[in-house]
Length: 321
Image (cartoon, rainbow, N blue to C red; front, side, top):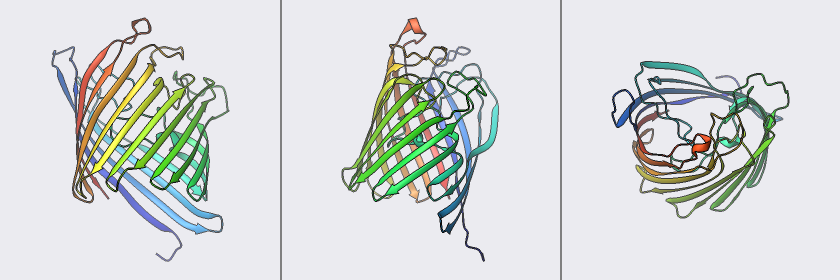
């Protein structure tokens, strides 16, 4: 009050019940469960200046979940792995984002252009997607272009304070043509000297139906994308009414990377995932989501990749504000 600054507070409270088809080495049980509670709080301050909108954004996030216990099995392409095993309740609170914007300039800790995905919960179209960054976005009509200088203080093999001041570089060019939109993203890892490329195309088929497609290719493992040599993904969403939405999603990975290996080469293994989620919103700010996905991974035993097939699922309750 009494200033030129607009302040918006927002966030959500979320509770997830995850299940995964695993064989517990301690008990022999076929299925495992994990529960996670999350609080996400954002502060968004904006004011108009002669140079454009001046914005300051801060997001804090805390989780309370069962900590990884006897083992944790990660399937390539799953950015949020399901942990199943003996363990206690763990709680973490941290900074999710903190950045300053003036016009098209962004400086701070934020999600980059590789963070975007497609409809559905089964896609995984980026690896590390948050950095300390300096970025600039130019918009004109239905077009936009973004250039980002990214610093994560590490490389895909876990080295900290790597002896090279040069940042990673990422960029995006996107456009909207009526009901169709497209975005091409490229990233260069200055440590591995490799690059990755991604194209996402979406179309509103009707007022209630949307189709989105994505494709990725990498010359080698990069911090932006280290899951496989290439991947394709598709998602379809249908909205019945203001309360009910159904989304289906599938993804295929070719040349899966074994992140346990120091070498940046991809393997000869492949994998795929397919599934769907049903969303119910009894009120506008309360979401109940039920999802199930089937995962399949081929083998490349010479490079440490074993065949694996299993189910995962989730029930989510989320109150946004």
